[in-house]
Length: 314
Image (cartoon, rainbow, N blue to C red; front, top):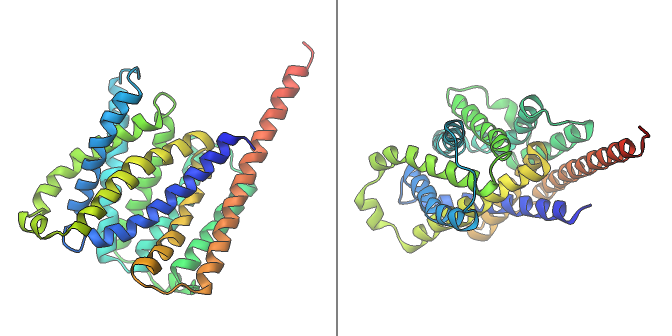
C-alpha cells in the first residue's frame, strides 16, 4: 500500500478522534454560551486562521468564477450553517440516541450519494464495510440495546435529524466536485467563510454581553479547540481524505466518533467504559478495514488494467 494512502487513512482516523473530542468541548462551551454563539465563534475563529494560511500557502490559486462562488456558498450553507443549526436543535430537543444517530447514518448516506452523483464504484466489500462499521457505531450509541432504535418511533424533530444528515452528506459530495479544481485548504476556507457569514445574524440575535462576560477560561479554551483543531485543521484533513481515497471510503471513518466521544466522556466526565463499547469498537474497526481493503483492491485492479493496455500490441 502506498505511503500516501496510509498517511491519508491515519489523518482520517485522527480527524474523527478530534471530532469526538468536539462533543466534550461543545458540552463545556454551551454551559454558558448559546449553541449558535459557539458555532459562530468556532467558524469565525477558524476563518481568521484559514484565510491567511490559504493566501500564504496557495498564492497562485485559480481565480474563482461565478459558478465557483456558488459552489463555495453551497459548501458553507450545507456543511457549516445547516448542519450545525440542525445538529444543535437536535441535541437540544431530540433524545440522545436519536441525535447520536446523525453521526452513524452519515456514512452510508455519503456512500449512497457518492455512487449516485460521483459515480464512485461501490463493491460488496464497501457495502459490508459500511454495514459492519454502522452496526458497531449503533451498538456503542445504544449500549448494546439495538432494539431501542425501533422503539423510538417518528417525531417532528426527526425531520431536523434528516436535514442534518443530508446537509453533511451533500457537503462531502459537493466538496469532491470542488476539489477537482481547488485544494482541500481552499475549499474548506471558502466554505468556512460563507458559513460564518450565514451564522452571523443568528449569533447577533442569540448572543448577550452577559453570557460572554460570565464565560470562564474553560469555555473559551473549548471554543478555541473547536475553532482551531476541529474546524481549521481537521476539516481540511477531511476534504484531503475525500480527495485522496473517495467520499465513500472516507465516510466510514465517521463511525470512530462514538468511540472517541465515549473515551473522552470517561476521561472528562467520569462516564463508565464497558465491554459493550469494546464490542462496538471491534465492529467499527473491522468495517474500516473492509473499506481500506476494498480501496486497495480497486487500486490494484486499475493498475492491472492500465498495465494490460500498455502491453497490448497496437
